[in-house]
Amino acid sequence: MKCPFCGCEESKVIDSRPTDENERIRRRRECVECSKRFTTYEVIEDVPIIVIKKDKSREVFDRTKILNGILRACKKRPVPATVLENAISEIETTLQSATDREVTSVRIGELIMEKLKDIDEVAYVRFASVYKAFDSATAFIEEISKLK
Image 1 (tube, rainbow, N blue to C red):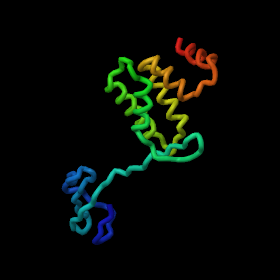
Image 2: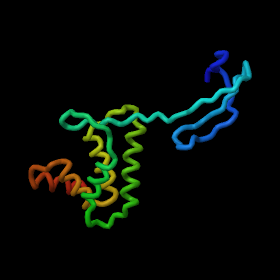
Image 3: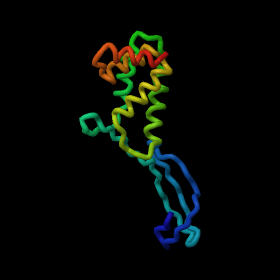
Image 4: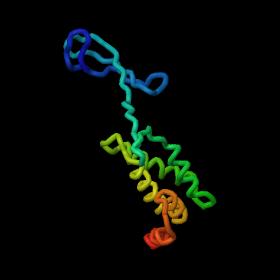
């Protein structure tokens, strides 16, 4: 951190604590050259994930949309809410850890289907039937046969 008084690029942290809102870290620093103290604030950079939809429009990633889709697929199925919440968190973590800040809705759908396949096969088939928009019973049967 560059000293605002002498321009030295080295300083040591004297004190570090979260701000009242717990959204930033306040650091008291001391310049190693001139020994003057100054305060810096550290903020986590929140870069949103942009979803590219099938019609090429773009929108900010919305976790609740995934939750609603999964809840519809798991309706009347014995799947605990904590399992669904963990699955959504894992999907979001996968997207956040990617280097690209843009993701296609197709990729998100694939991630959801991968999770649902492990959680509940009926929910997987329900989600796949809407997501893949089967145009015939044959396509539906082919998807079910992949589960075996």
